[in-house]
Image 1 (cartoon, rainbow, N blue to C red):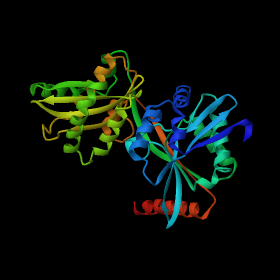
Image 2 (cartoon, rainbow, N blue to C red):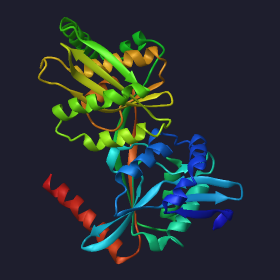
Image 3 (tube, one colour):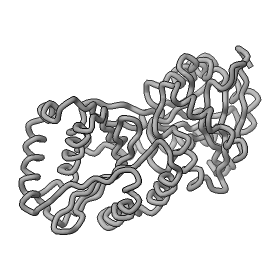
Image 4 (spheres, rainbow, N blue to C red):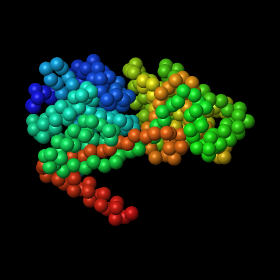
Length: 361
């Protein structure tokens, strides 16, 4: 390995257990610190979703001083173009809607980590995998930049495509200054909705931390009743996450009127950022009102009072996210294949599907 770097492959639960302190330390020293990269989030995902066709494929990059980077990956075995194929993916995907996934590298070691991982993947580790499919990488990822440089230098075929757009808002010191920055249409709609809601006796209730143990089933009762999606899988995952006592906590906000829940927002709290993971609203209550938007406004108001630095809407193209946000991040998906028949056929199949979509449009 160049520059005296060594790669350790962690592919057992025993090996995973040894990473606890190293993981947290590296994450805090990296530029990619995110709740979706915390050990608790990924450990909960492993417990809920690993399955028989998936196995750990975590790479730890070390030098003489110890670990400098961790690639939090797993291998998924499936079939592509009729052949067995092994694909490297990020822990935390595709279930649970993880964002901001990356190789965790100590600040200043991103290039060394990218080079070491590249050398391993296309050297000693090449026998383990056929396709590398990394989704939800931040567009500004330093690891991605240096890894792409190595791919380009070697003349390897890769696909880098837009994955998602992530609206977010940096919160100012006062609610007044935040609402003054919104469009006149957004402010007017918010105030109009709350005038009507107050006539119904509506109120905003927030549950945080341990107080969400009872309110989480309450949220999913509304979510399941009002959504086309079955929330049982996400509910189970969050129950596991909450039981681990991690640095990620829950905040659940309800809009209550006439003694019933008419809207609810499920948030993840990490550091000084509030992340909107899911929402539900009873559209039959009053179809003239935008209940979800009214509740978001109240949550933003309370977050500013609590000195929260950022409200993150997470990925999704819903129009309301853009109306409340004042900035955004982009994420990308990287796909690379080995030079073997399985990989060639998988790449060809994917390109043909994309071509068919373009023709049908």
